[in-house]
Image (cartoon, rainbow, N blue to C red; front, side, top):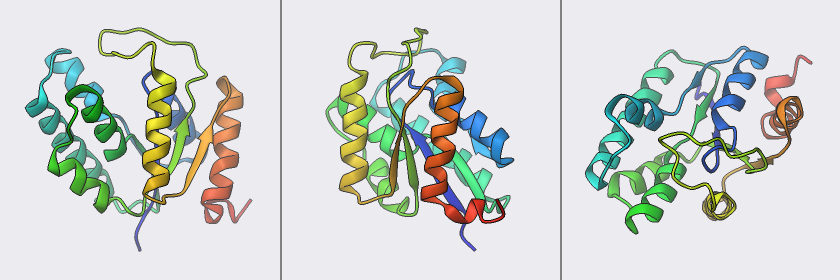
Length: 178
């Protein structure tokens, strides 16, 4: 049986990682943190086109490793959608592995985080002023691929509550025992 994969995605500082962790705790399910952040925290914030491809390949390996545990349901903090948007914005082109990855991720369902949380600067974030544009780029791409999508808004507990309600709609089988 294929696992149910829900991707929490969106622009920087939109609460993706915090929401993944909160959902993981609430649903007692595994989640895969954002690999790009781990890589750049370890190696430094600088990167080029080739490094982006290296980061993407590490991202895929991390997700594949988590799937080897045969979870029924798993959360991913980002997927190829984020990498495509990132690559288009920074390099005005998208590497073939990312395009292929988008095609391989047909079963992904999405919680798209709206940038209604305050910007939290750190040395890895690059886009404090265009988060809404990046949000719409994610939305357009997901909708263009005809993948299930729910937009998540709200602060703190409200955001978690809205995400759980969205999951009830996306994946009702998760809650059949409720």
